[in-house]
Length: 284
Image 1 (cartoon, rainbow, N blue to C red):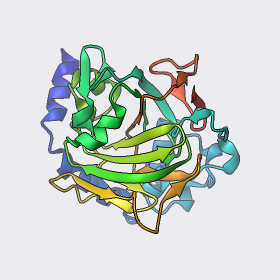
Image 2 (image 1 turned 90 degrees about the vertical axis):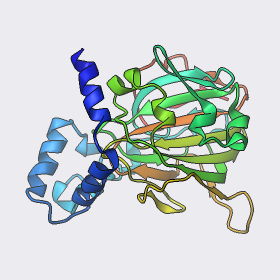
Image 3 (image 1 turned 30 degrees about the vertical axis):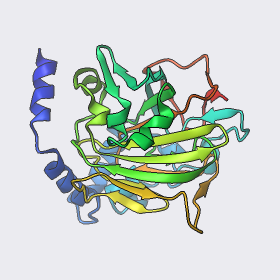
């Protein structure tokens, strides 16, 4: 009962207003007690500073620069063969499996619509009907940059405005259609294994998402779906496996979609298990 009351109270909060305040605080070099906040954060969330390219907290002039810290090159490795699909982030597997026509499994008793997830755009949803999905949750301690799980060419980016519910496990289990209701940035790639969609899902205090080709996509949050076509033109965006493709300016969730191509999930994948960027998710 207490859990449901907490979720109801958070649902009623002015998500975007609070996120705007957090946006300013995390980018200010004049935040009071900034050094202590960074030290507390690192200790409380057990951040692995020894993996960071810069281990000294004083080297980060703002909280956001600390959130989006780079890792040492040797900290993560990708299998570069075309037969392996790699994890794009550090986090924990929420769910994975088959898309049942238009339905994606969120949590016990909850599915959500692929069509709604893709901003109501039929052309964006259609390639993934009866395909596969995996959802990975990033906690506050995790590395917040997102890397390519497979080499691909960007064909479209879609910004879908929405709510900013928390994406912590309790909310995923209790808020119907959460990932198709929160604000999100969808990047669709053409790859040798077929279409791949990488969907960055925002959350309360995590409403800022960016990509390497367009910079910060949100904020501003906007009020309508905005789709940008990258399939034509001279400046094609090609990203190799392992290359950075974007980042969350805190932590959140990424949903990846795959077409109806042949894929075999790795035998050791289990819902809710921690996973590191670069680990093999599936064999193509």
